Length: 358
Ligand SMILES: O=C(O)CCC(=O)C(=O)O
Ligand SMILES: [Fe+2]
Image 1 (tube, protein in one colour):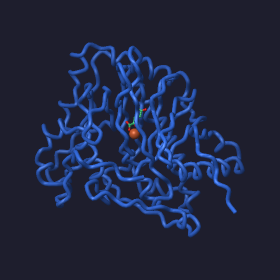
Image 2: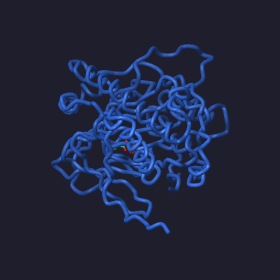
Image 3: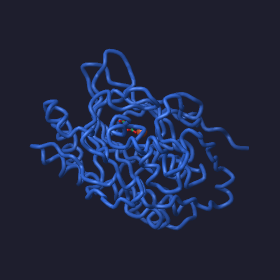
Protein backbone atom coordinates (compact mmCIF):
# COMPACT_ATOMS: atom_id res chain seq x y z
CA UNK A 1 0.00 0.00 0.00
CA UNK A 2 1.30 3.48 -0.78
CA UNK A 3 0.61 6.23 1.69
CA UNK A 4 -0.26 9.55 0.07
CA UNK A 5 2.24 12.25 1.04
CA UNK A 6 0.79 15.44 2.53
CA UNK A 7 0.35 18.29 0.04
CA UNK A 8 3.40 20.51 -0.35
CA UNK A 9 3.19 23.82 1.46
CA UNK A 10 6.58 25.02 0.18
CA UNK A 11 8.80 24.12 -2.75
CA UNK A 12 11.58 21.60 -2.02
CA UNK A 13 15.22 22.77 -1.82
CA UNK A 14 17.93 20.90 -3.76
CA UNK A 15 21.69 21.38 -3.54
CA UNK A 16 23.52 21.27 -6.88
CA UNK A 17 26.90 20.96 -5.15
CA UNK A 18 25.99 17.35 -4.26
CA UNK A 19 27.12 16.56 -7.79
CA UNK A 20 30.70 17.31 -6.73
CA UNK A 21 30.58 15.17 -3.59
CA UNK A 22 31.01 11.65 -4.92
CA UNK A 23 28.80 9.23 -6.82
CA UNK A 24 26.43 8.45 -3.91
CA UNK A 25 25.70 12.14 -3.35
CA UNK A 26 25.26 12.68 -7.09
CA UNK A 27 22.85 9.76 -7.26
CA UNK A 28 20.85 11.23 -4.35
CA UNK A 29 20.69 14.57 -6.16
CA UNK A 30 19.46 12.92 -9.36
CA UNK A 31 16.77 10.92 -7.57
CA UNK A 32 15.50 14.00 -5.81
CA UNK A 33 15.73 16.14 -8.95
CA UNK A 34 13.70 13.69 -10.94
CA UNK A 35 11.15 13.08 -8.17
CA UNK A 36 10.41 16.77 -7.57
CA UNK A 37 10.21 17.62 -11.25
CA UNK A 38 7.86 14.71 -11.79
CA UNK A 39 5.66 15.74 -8.86
CA UNK A 40 5.64 19.55 -8.86
CA UNK A 41 8.01 20.76 -11.58
CA UNK A 42 9.33 23.58 -9.37
CA UNK A 43 12.12 23.71 -6.77
CA UNK A 44 14.76 25.89 -5.13
CA UNK A 45 18.35 25.21 -6.16
CA UNK A 46 21.32 26.13 -3.94
CA UNK A 47 25.00 25.41 -4.56
CA UNK A 48 24.88 26.84 -8.08
CA UNK A 49 28.30 28.49 -7.95
CA UNK A 50 26.79 31.94 -8.65
CA UNK A 51 28.61 34.16 -6.17
CA UNK A 52 26.92 36.51 -3.68
CA UNK A 53 28.97 39.26 -5.30
CA UNK A 54 27.44 38.57 -8.73
CA UNK A 55 23.93 38.43 -7.21
CA UNK A 56 24.47 41.77 -5.43
CA UNK A 57 25.88 43.36 -8.59
CA UNK A 58 22.93 42.11 -10.65
CA UNK A 59 20.48 43.64 -8.18
CA UNK A 60 22.34 46.96 -8.00
CA UNK A 61 22.74 47.37 -11.75
CA UNK A 62 19.10 46.33 -12.34
CA UNK A 63 17.92 49.02 -9.96
CA UNK A 64 20.19 51.53 -11.69
CA UNK A 65 18.68 50.59 -15.03
CA UNK A 66 15.06 50.98 -13.93
CA UNK A 67 15.92 54.28 -12.21
CA UNK A 68 17.11 55.78 -15.53
CA UNK A 69 14.91 58.55 -16.94
CA UNK A 70 12.08 57.19 -19.11
CA UNK A 71 13.63 58.69 -22.22
CA UNK A 72 16.85 56.69 -21.70
CA UNK A 73 14.91 53.46 -21.28
CA UNK A 74 12.65 54.25 -24.24
CA UNK A 75 15.76 54.90 -26.33
CA UNK A 76 16.20 51.11 -26.31
CA UNK A 77 12.51 50.23 -26.48
CA UNK A 78 11.74 46.85 -28.04
CA UNK A 79 9.71 48.69 -30.68
CA UNK A 80 13.10 49.45 -32.25
CA UNK A 81 14.08 45.79 -32.46
CA UNK A 82 12.61 43.26 -34.90
CA UNK A 83 14.32 40.69 -32.64
CA UNK A 84 12.20 41.71 -29.62
CA UNK A 85 15.25 42.89 -27.67
CA UNK A 86 15.50 45.79 -25.29
CA UNK A 87 13.10 47.59 -23.02
CA UNK A 88 9.42 46.71 -22.62
CA UNK A 89 7.64 49.51 -20.81
CA UNK A 90 4.87 49.01 -18.28
CA UNK A 91 1.66 47.75 -19.83
CA UNK A 92 3.19 46.58 -23.13
CA UNK A 93 3.27 42.86 -22.32
CA UNK A 94 0.37 40.46 -21.99
CA UNK A 95 -0.35 36.96 -20.77
CA UNK A 96 -3.38 35.40 -22.46
CA UNK A 97 -4.61 38.79 -23.55
CA UNK A 98 -4.39 40.47 -20.11
CA UNK A 99 -1.85 43.13 -19.35
CA UNK A 100 1.08 42.22 -17.07
CA UNK A 101 2.15 45.01 -14.75
CA UNK A 102 5.93 44.93 -15.16
CA UNK A 103 8.73 46.62 -17.06
CA UNK A 104 11.74 44.69 -18.30
CA UNK A 105 14.74 44.40 -20.55
CA UNK A 106 15.06 41.32 -22.80
CA UNK A 107 18.52 40.05 -23.65
CA UNK A 108 19.44 37.11 -25.90
CA UNK A 109 22.61 35.89 -27.51
CA UNK A 110 24.44 38.73 -29.28
CA UNK A 111 24.55 38.13 -33.05
CA UNK A 112 24.39 39.72 -36.48
CA UNK A 113 21.01 39.97 -38.18
CA UNK A 114 20.40 37.16 -40.71
CA UNK A 115 20.01 38.79 -44.12
CA UNK A 116 19.55 35.64 -46.22
CA UNK A 117 16.06 36.02 -47.72
CA UNK A 118 15.76 32.24 -48.00
CA UNK A 119 16.28 31.70 -44.25
CA UNK A 120 13.25 30.46 -42.30
CA UNK A 121 11.25 33.23 -40.64
CA UNK A 122 12.31 32.25 -37.11
CA UNK A 123 15.81 33.47 -38.00
CA UNK A 124 14.32 36.93 -37.60
CA UNK A 125 14.88 36.38 -33.87
CA UNK A 126 18.66 36.39 -34.42
CA UNK A 127 20.33 39.77 -33.98
CA UNK A 128 21.86 42.30 -31.62
CA UNK A 129 20.72 43.31 -28.15
CA UNK A 130 19.95 46.88 -27.23
CA UNK A 131 21.95 48.23 -24.28
CA UNK A 132 21.39 51.48 -22.40
CA UNK A 133 23.96 54.20 -22.88
CA UNK A 134 25.95 55.06 -19.80
CA UNK A 135 25.41 51.77 -17.98
CA UNK A 136 28.10 49.42 -19.34
CA UNK A 137 27.97 47.36 -16.15
CA UNK A 138 24.55 46.08 -17.17
CA UNK A 139 25.96 44.36 -20.23
CA UNK A 140 28.99 42.97 -18.39
CA UNK A 141 26.84 41.63 -15.57
CA UNK A 142 24.18 40.18 -17.87
CA UNK A 143 26.83 38.39 -19.94
CA UNK A 144 28.49 36.96 -16.84
CA UNK A 145 25.08 35.88 -15.57
CA UNK A 146 24.20 34.10 -18.80
CA UNK A 147 27.51 32.24 -18.87
CA UNK A 148 27.13 31.09 -15.27
CA UNK A 149 23.54 29.96 -15.75
CA UNK A 150 24.24 28.06 -18.97
CA UNK A 151 26.63 25.93 -16.90
CA UNK A 152 23.93 25.32 -14.26
CA UNK A 153 21.27 24.53 -16.88
CA UNK A 154 23.53 22.02 -18.64
CA UNK A 155 24.32 20.27 -15.37
CA UNK A 156 20.62 19.90 -14.61
CA UNK A 157 19.83 18.64 -18.10
CA UNK A 158 22.65 16.08 -17.99
CA UNK A 159 21.35 14.74 -14.71
CA UNK A 160 17.76 14.53 -15.88
CA UNK A 161 18.99 12.74 -18.99
CA UNK A 162 20.92 10.18 -16.91
CA UNK A 163 17.99 9.65 -14.56
CA UNK A 164 15.61 9.14 -17.49
CA UNK A 165 17.88 6.54 -19.05
CA UNK A 166 18.83 8.63 -22.07
CA UNK A 167 22.59 9.08 -21.43
CA UNK A 168 24.27 12.20 -20.05
CA UNK A 169 24.82 14.03 -23.34
CA UNK A 170 21.28 13.50 -24.71
CA UNK A 171 20.15 17.11 -24.41
CA UNK A 172 23.57 18.56 -25.27
CA UNK A 173 23.49 16.51 -28.50
CA UNK A 174 19.94 17.48 -29.44
CA UNK A 175 19.78 21.08 -28.30
CA UNK A 176 23.02 22.39 -29.83
CA UNK A 177 24.01 25.96 -29.02
CA UNK A 178 21.25 27.22 -26.72
CA UNK A 179 19.06 30.16 -27.69
CA UNK A 180 18.66 31.71 -24.27
CA UNK A 181 16.59 34.65 -23.07
CA UNK A 182 17.48 36.69 -20.01
CA UNK A 183 14.92 39.12 -18.65
CA UNK A 184 15.54 41.68 -15.96
CA UNK A 185 12.16 42.61 -14.60
CA UNK A 186 10.70 45.21 -12.26
CA UNK A 187 7.22 44.86 -10.80
CA UNK A 188 6.11 48.22 -9.40
CA UNK A 189 3.94 48.26 -6.29
CA UNK A 190 0.19 48.62 -6.75
CA UNK A 191 -2.56 49.75 -4.36
CA UNK A 192 -4.13 46.29 -4.24
CA UNK A 193 -2.86 42.86 -5.33
CA UNK A 194 -2.97 42.66 -9.12
CA UNK A 195 -1.51 40.78 -12.09
CA UNK A 196 2.28 41.17 -12.19
CA UNK A 197 2.32 38.25 -14.61
CA UNK A 198 -0.76 36.18 -15.31
CA UNK A 199 -0.89 32.43 -14.71
CA UNK A 200 1.09 30.55 -17.33
CA UNK A 201 3.37 27.61 -17.98
CA UNK A 202 6.79 28.48 -19.31
CA UNK A 203 6.89 27.42 -22.93
CA UNK A 204 10.55 26.46 -23.25
CA UNK A 205 12.89 23.96 -21.67
CA UNK A 206 14.11 25.27 -18.36
CA UNK A 207 13.84 28.49 -16.32
CA UNK A 208 16.31 29.63 -13.66
CA UNK A 209 14.77 32.50 -11.72
CA UNK A 210 16.52 34.83 -9.32
CA UNK A 211 14.40 37.09 -7.11
CA UNK A 212 15.57 39.96 -4.94
CA UNK A 213 15.87 38.86 -1.31
CA UNK A 214 12.85 39.27 0.93
CA UNK A 215 10.23 40.05 -1.73
CA UNK A 216 7.51 37.46 -2.38
CA UNK A 217 4.86 37.49 -5.08
CA UNK A 218 5.55 34.31 -7.07
CA UNK A 219 2.87 31.65 -6.65
CA UNK A 220 2.88 28.09 -7.96
CA UNK A 221 -0.21 26.01 -8.67
CA UNK A 222 -0.32 22.73 -6.78
CA UNK A 223 -1.94 19.71 -8.46
CA UNK A 224 -4.99 20.04 -6.20
CA UNK A 225 -5.62 23.55 -7.52
CA UNK A 226 -4.23 25.49 -4.51
CA UNK A 227 -1.74 28.30 -5.13
CA UNK A 228 1.33 28.14 -2.89
CA UNK A 229 3.72 31.01 -2.25
CA UNK A 230 7.28 30.67 -3.51
CA UNK A 231 9.17 33.50 -1.78
CA UNK A 232 12.90 33.80 -2.48
CA UNK A 233 15.26 31.63 -0.40
CA UNK A 234 18.72 33.12 0.29
CA UNK A 235 21.38 32.01 -2.25
CA UNK A 236 18.87 29.88 -4.15
CA UNK A 237 17.50 30.05 -7.66
CA UNK A 238 13.93 28.97 -8.33
CA UNK A 239 13.96 26.36 -11.07
CA UNK A 240 11.03 25.21 -13.14
CA UNK A 241 10.68 23.29 -16.33
CA UNK A 242 8.80 24.43 -19.37
CA UNK A 243 6.42 22.63 -21.69
CA UNK A 244 9.16 21.64 -24.14
CA UNK A 245 11.02 19.60 -21.52
CA UNK A 246 7.71 18.16 -20.45
CA UNK A 247 7.07 17.08 -24.02
CA UNK A 248 10.61 15.69 -24.44
CA UNK A 249 9.89 13.44 -21.47
CA UNK A 250 6.38 12.46 -22.64
CA UNK A 251 4.93 14.30 -19.65
CA UNK A 252 7.08 12.55 -17.05
CA UNK A 253 8.61 15.85 -15.95
CA UNK A 254 5.92 18.46 -15.43
CA UNK A 255 5.63 22.10 -16.44
CA UNK A 256 3.65 23.86 -13.74
CA UNK A 257 1.44 26.90 -13.83
CA UNK A 258 2.70 29.95 -11.93
CA UNK A 259 1.99 33.67 -11.66
CA UNK A 260 3.30 36.79 -9.97
CA UNK A 261 1.12 38.97 -7.78
CA UNK A 262 2.28 42.60 -7.75
CA UNK A 263 3.89 43.89 -4.57
CA UNK A 264 1.90 46.42 -2.60
CA UNK A 265 2.90 50.08 -3.05
CA UNK A 266 5.28 51.60 -2.19
CA UNK A 267 7.20 48.32 -2.52
CA UNK A 268 8.61 46.94 -5.76
CA UNK A 269 10.12 43.66 -6.86
CA UNK A 270 13.10 42.90 -9.08
CA UNK A 271 13.40 39.46 -10.61
CA UNK A 272 15.74 37.96 -13.18
CA UNK A 273 14.34 34.96 -15.09
CA UNK A 274 16.70 33.12 -17.43
CA UNK A 275 15.13 30.84 -20.02
CA UNK A 276 17.34 28.08 -21.38
CA UNK A 277 16.23 26.80 -24.76
CA UNK A 278 17.59 24.76 -27.68
CA UNK A 279 19.21 26.31 -30.72
CA UNK A 280 16.60 27.66 -33.14
CA UNK A 281 17.44 24.96 -35.69
CA UNK A 282 17.15 22.06 -33.33
CA UNK A 283 14.66 19.31 -33.91
CA UNK A 284 12.53 18.42 -30.98
CA UNK A 285 13.67 15.12 -29.30
CA UNK A 286 11.39 12.70 -27.42
CA UNK A 287 13.07 10.40 -24.90
CA UNK A 288 12.19 6.73 -25.08
CA UNK A 289 11.52 6.31 -21.36
CA UNK A 290 12.22 3.08 -19.44
CA UNK A 291 8.93 1.21 -18.91
CA UNK A 292 8.46 2.01 -15.17
CA UNK A 293 8.79 5.74 -15.87
CA UNK A 294 6.66 5.58 -18.98
CA UNK A 295 3.87 4.04 -16.90
CA UNK A 296 3.89 7.17 -14.74
CA UNK A 297 4.20 9.68 -17.59
CA UNK A 298 1.22 11.93 -18.27
CA UNK A 299 1.34 13.29 -21.82
CA UNK A 300 -0.56 16.54 -22.04
CA UNK A 301 -3.45 16.97 -24.43
CA UNK A 302 -2.44 19.87 -26.64
CA UNK A 303 -4.51 22.97 -27.02
CA UNK A 304 -5.09 23.25 -30.79
CA UNK A 305 -4.91 27.04 -30.43
CA UNK A 306 -1.45 26.72 -28.91
CA UNK A 307 0.37 24.25 -31.15
CA UNK A 308 3.95 23.05 -30.77
CA UNK A 309 6.28 22.71 -33.69
CA UNK A 310 8.98 20.05 -34.15
CA UNK A 311 11.61 22.65 -34.92
CA UNK A 312 12.37 24.80 -31.89
CA UNK A 313 12.69 28.07 -33.83
CA UNK A 314 8.96 28.11 -34.72
CA UNK A 315 8.05 27.76 -31.05
CA UNK A 316 10.36 30.61 -30.12
CA UNK A 317 8.91 32.82 -32.84
CA UNK A 318 5.33 32.01 -31.85
CA UNK A 319 6.10 32.82 -28.20
CA UNK A 320 7.61 36.19 -29.01
CA UNK A 321 4.87 37.20 -31.43
CA UNK A 322 2.23 36.36 -28.85
CA UNK A 323 3.92 38.04 -25.89
CA UNK A 324 4.67 41.24 -27.81
CA UNK A 325 1.87 41.85 -30.33
CA UNK A 326 2.91 45.50 -30.62
CA UNK A 327 6.41 44.62 -31.86
CA UNK A 328 4.93 41.86 -34.02
CA UNK A 329 2.60 44.36 -35.71
CA UNK A 330 5.49 46.72 -36.49
CA UNK A 331 7.88 44.18 -38.04
CA UNK A 332 6.12 40.85 -38.59
CA UNK A 333 2.61 41.54 -39.82
CA UNK A 334 3.32 39.33 -42.83
CA UNK A 335 3.87 36.34 -40.52
CA UNK A 336 0.74 37.05 -38.57
CA UNK A 337 -1.23 37.18 -41.81
CA UNK A 338 0.33 33.99 -43.19
CA UNK A 339 0.34 31.75 -40.12
CA UNK A 340 3.44 30.08 -38.76
CA UNK A 341 5.81 27.94 -40.74
CA UNK A 342 3.83 28.51 -43.89
CA UNK A 343 1.16 26.26 -42.36
CA UNK A 344 -2.45 26.97 -41.58
CA UNK A 345 -1.59 27.22 -37.88
CA UNK A 346 -2.12 30.77 -36.79
CA UNK A 347 0.42 32.39 -34.54
CA UNK A 348 -1.69 35.44 -33.96
CA UNK A 349 -2.41 35.81 -30.24
CA UNK A 350 -5.83 34.38 -29.56
CA UNK A 351 -7.31 36.41 -26.75
CA UNK A 352 -9.77 33.72 -25.79
CA UNK A 353 -7.31 30.86 -25.63
CA UNK A 354 -6.66 29.56 -22.12
CA UNK A 355 -3.48 27.88 -20.94
CA UNK A 356 -3.54 24.11 -21.46
CA UNK A 357 -5.09 22.27 -18.51
CA UNK A 358 -2.61 20.94 -16.03
O1 LIG B 1 9.25 37.31 -12.05
C1 LIG B 1 9.01 36.19 -11.62
O2 LIG B 1 9.16 35.89 -10.43
C2 LIG B 1 8.52 35.11 -12.55
C3 LIG B 1 8.35 35.56 -13.96
C4 LIG B 1 7.86 34.49 -14.87
O3 LIG B 1 7.24 33.54 -14.49
C5 LIG B 1 8.15 34.59 -16.32
O4 LIG B 1 8.63 35.65 -16.77
O5 LIG B 1 7.92 33.60 -17.04
FE1 LIG C 1 7.16 31.99 -16.01
